[in-house]
Length: 242
Image 1 (cartoon, rainbow, N blue to C red):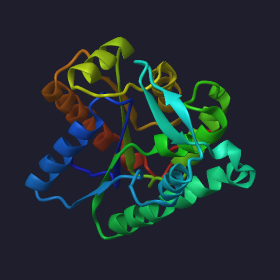
Image 2 (cartoon, rainbow, N blue to C red):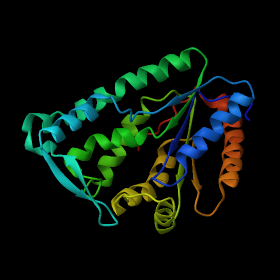
Image 3 (cartoon, helix red, strand yellow):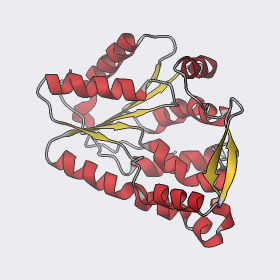
């Protein structure tokens, strides 16, 4: 696939953009070509934050969240417990820390880490304060994004899978999803490629609503070849602090 492998390949994008499909395609392709791969998912069901959320729901400490299509879901009402609300970003970070350590160890042992969302999980630390990104200032999103980039290896490549939000929503409906992410999440991902590509050199944006899965995968391979040509320059700092 590429002559010089990255240490981590990250897929970012809203629900329905094809992150999991492409991550699995990359994993299968690399394994078929003899490379060792490790799949990284920071949203494991047993992390600290999710356990606390489930416990609060058992105690009936919840509120209702309304999705884009009007359906409602019970979510833990973090704000009702002041001390929990104040330290929630720390709890969220501790929740993903074991997965970060796993990825680090896998990289040390020569595995290519393939991540289905990474930066998004750092952004979600703010959800207790800003809801589903609806009121979160872009400047705050940029700061947290830059912080998240400090936790990835230097030899990494990021693919932001995006596209027209209406087409992505139609795709979700066709798949029979019972809930729809709010417009603010799609809005966040419409902004993400612009500033992420500005601050991280090896970040590539791909429109998945205008291409088939096979075409997107070919784009990933093409950009990966571009990465290989840049690989000799990795001694330079990858993140520009604007």
